[in-house]
Structure formats: structure tokens, C-alpha cells
Amino acid sequence: MTMLREARLRISHFALFTACLAMASPAHAFKITEPPDGAKLTAGTTMTARVDLGKDAGVVTVRYYWYGEQDEVLVEQDDSTAIGSIVAPVALIGSIEQDPAFGGPLNVPDDTIGPMRLLAVAEISRGRLGAKSVFDEVIVTVEPPAALTAIDFETDKPLQLGRVGQSSAFGHVDSMGKVFELPVVGEFADGVTRRISTPASGTSYTSSNDTVINVLRDGLLQIVGNGKTTITASNRGKHAMLDVDVNVNDEPNEPPVADAGTNKAVKTGSRVKLSGLKSRDPEGEALYYSWSQVRGSKISLLDANSSEASFLAPTVSESRTYRFKLRVTDKKGADSLPAFVDVTVNP
Image (cartoon, rainbow, N blue to C red; front, side, top):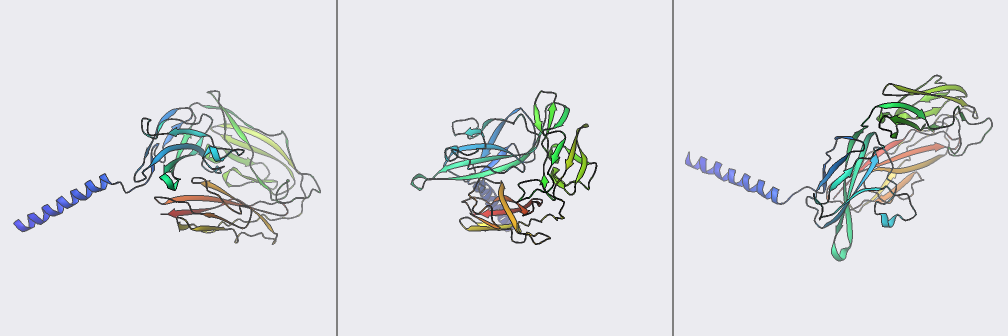
């Protein structure tokens, strides 16, 4: 019995030592701890942003950015490298002097509604080796602080789409099969106008004639025939109506289908290829490809308008996921629905 107690004691001491060692040497990497993933926030309020540096030593600054859940990552987050480009505005720059360190007061965008991504990019100094960056991001839901009072379409009324006999090249003009989104805004009781075009913001659509305009997923609409229809947008019990007159070249044309490939996991530093070669057009038409990045810290995407795009997997200290979107258009102007692919980069 004595030997058994001694063995149990040794096991207990070892477990305690292991736990203390784990606390002393964090195994995790840079992480946003506040707000947590899935948090519900109120537009226009101020919250405290916090990060845990984990095992990522040498952090100099942390920059925070807000994006819509499916917004494209526009440019490199380092403003100094984005001269002449559209820059995602920096919501907060955190340093070690702040309280909490590398965090602080963060304003929730006043004019947003629905799912939002908060991206935090940490710049790490490596002395003579230069600098590198690591990131983390969370998805939160932003609710308006006031009631919706009215909604409206921000477009010509009535809306005229196309004209007889027009030619079309890669969706640059209205054509049979073209997919589009209508800009819808909501007026709220706090006096703020917010864009509410997507279903994620609570907006739904109906078409009075679905042989002219067909309602697709994600708030997208598609031209499927000539004639007239009325599009109704509804959100929080409010409604807006838009008369649409479609008069495009009525040559039959089935929309293409985008295929961004299967999700994959790669190693830091490897060359990653994104393939849209399985995308197809029912009539066998040549396709125009458009790749964009919609998740993760900005990377340099090569050949974004070809069937196969590529990028160099960035340095990460913990597995991170990058998401890419592919849209294809046939030469008559018909568009596909977007297709997505996730690439997980491992250390």
C-alpha cells in the first residue's frame, strides 16, 4: 500500500509540474481574446480589444481592421505599402505601452449590421532578419442600436436593364444570365443609414415574375428573361419595391458554374496553386475568371484573372486559414454564383 501511495504521489507531482510548465511556456500563438469569436456587439459602441501574444515574441504593434464577413481583403494592411491603393482603414493600432498591452478602446463601426470580421495583424521584429507578421481573426455579429424605420433601393427607379441587340463580353453589360446585387439601405431611428443588401443583415427578396428576374442565394439576382417584374426587399417588417424592366439579347444562355477546388492544407513557404479548371459552361463557352481573397491577412495573389491563381504560403506560428472566392463569366455575359476554397497554412 505504501508503494502504491508513493507511486500516486509521484504521478501527482509530475502532473503539477507539467501544468506549471505549460502555463509558463504558452504553446499557443497570437490570438484575439476580446471580443471572442461569435460575440454580439452593438454598432457605434466602444469596446476593449485584447490579444494574447502566446509564443509569438517580439511583437511591436498590432493593427485591427473591420471587414464584412464576405468582403474582399483589399490591400496589404501596412498603410505605408498601399500608397495609391484603396486601404482598409485601421480601426486601432495597439502597442506595448497601452492598457491592455497591444489592445485598447476599439470602436464598432457605426454603419455596419450583421456578421463582421475583426482582423488583428501583429508585426514582429526579428532584428537583422527584418520583420514578419502574424494574424488572428474572429467573426462577430453587429446589431443596430435603434429600430429600422424605412428601407430603400439606391438605384434608378424604375430600373432599366439591357437593350435589344446589345453585345456582351465577360459580363460588362446586362445580358441573359447576368448575376447582380441591388444596393439596399436602411434608415434607422438613430439617424444612421446602413447598407442592408445581404441576407445576413436580415434582408430577403422576392420577384413578382421569376421568369424575368430570379432570386438566388446570398441576396443575388439573375436575369433569366425579358419583361417586367417587381423586386420587393423586406427587413424587420419594413418593405421597399422596385419596378424592373429587362430588355436584353434573348439568345438562350445557361450560366456557367464556378468550381474553386477542394480545401487544402499546406506548409509555410510552399507555393500554393488555386485551380478553377473544373469550372464549366453548359454551352462550352470560354470563361473569364476572377479570384479574390475574403479571409486572412492580405497575401499577394498572382494570376487572379486566370483559371489557376497562386500565392506563396506566408510564415505562420500556428495553423491559419485563408479563404478565396472564384467567380466565372462566359463570353455572353452570364455569371456564376461564387465558389469558395479554404487553404490552411501550417507552420
